[in-house]
Image 1: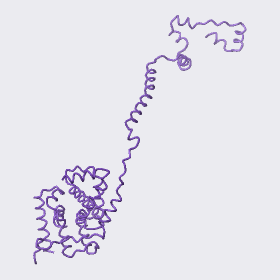
Image 2 (image 1 turned 90 degrees about the horizontal axis):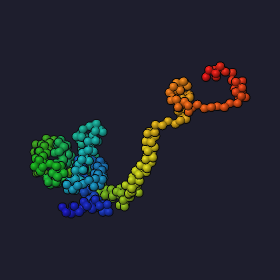
Image 3 (image 1 turned 180 degrees about the vertical axis):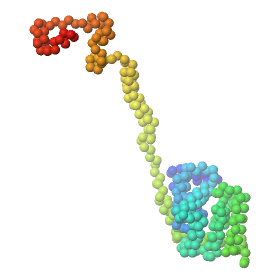
Image 4 (image 1 turned 45 degrees about the horizontal axis):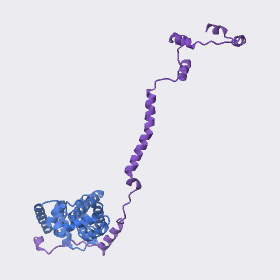
Length: 180
Length: 139
């Protein structure tokens, strides 16, 4: 905790800010990329959203009050950016967010940045049938392997509710894959 | 149909990949976009903002004082300039000489009375050049 406080001070100090930010970038770029990619599914869009996420993090460092952990604050920004991007893209295309994701999954087989098999595509199709919150919980728990406590800090939901949400998500996914 | 159980299956990866050296390039490119660490530049105005504002306030007050003072003097001064009054009575007013005389006190009329000494030749000249003699005599 004290280490994080010191690191935050380095991020806020103009003379050490850039060096500290580079450290932050190297630590979090990969997990945040995976988090955003799991929501958006497409690499190019994920690249844009990841950049926007780090820009927002950099611009808002002075507003970070340390009430939550740095990692959960950044994950929240990334989640909001990804969901906003997805909704805006769907709106521009005049379709729902679910339809947009369905289209993206259909294009995964020809995506050079995807090497999944039929079961992986079926799993993605099963996930998008879930409500938004359950999708997020499932992806963060199953693919990103975050702990319930970490997901709780990011989404602001109790661990108990998250466990229930994940349990429902798994049941629906299993039913979808079995029947498809 | 075999029932699919997630926990019975080996971990299913997302299958998402990134271009080669994506993360190395991402952090490098991002850091290049950040502004260099430069000493904070404070403009001269910002630095001396308080002093500049105080000087501006003093100057404004010093300009306003004579204007306000003069206006208050003029506003209290009810005396009318004698020439302006004379011009008004001569050219703008409908008051004739008799009404004017009625408005004056006896001593004021005595003050106005002046003795004009005219030479005979001058009188003759006036009478000779002014055709409207009857009107003059009536006046």
